[in-house]
Amino acid sequence: MIFMSQLSLLWVPNEQFGEYVLEELNVKSIVPCNDPLKYASLRAEPEFRVLGKRLGKSMPPVAKEVKAMSQEDILAFEKSGEITVAAHSLKLTGIKKEFICLGRRGGDQAL
Image (cartoon, rainbow, N blue to C red; front, side):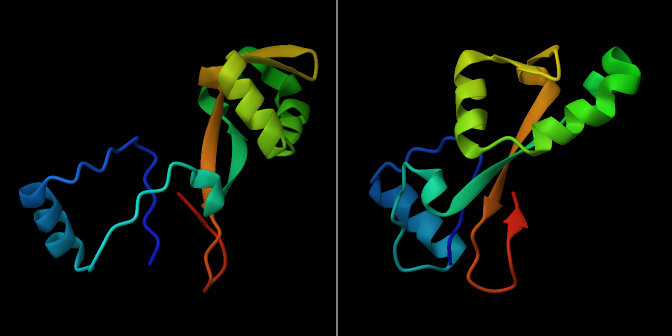
């Protein structure tokens, strides 16, 4: 089983805390991974509540371009904090990032 969290968690090898987590998750061990893209891919979705009021009728082409962003584009946007899409400048609050779990069974699932 692969467990992913959008929160940055540090696994501290504390005996008391570690045993509690292992018991609660009912697993034998936990292996931390600092690369979430090893088990998931990224997808960008426009924040319609934020952008819809501002962009009005320009929203459909902006939404289409945002949904077509590659993982590299999403990571660069997250690093810079701003991107221009269809001649509109968007900030971090205008686009949400989703992790799509690369599951082995039952297809992909958004996190």
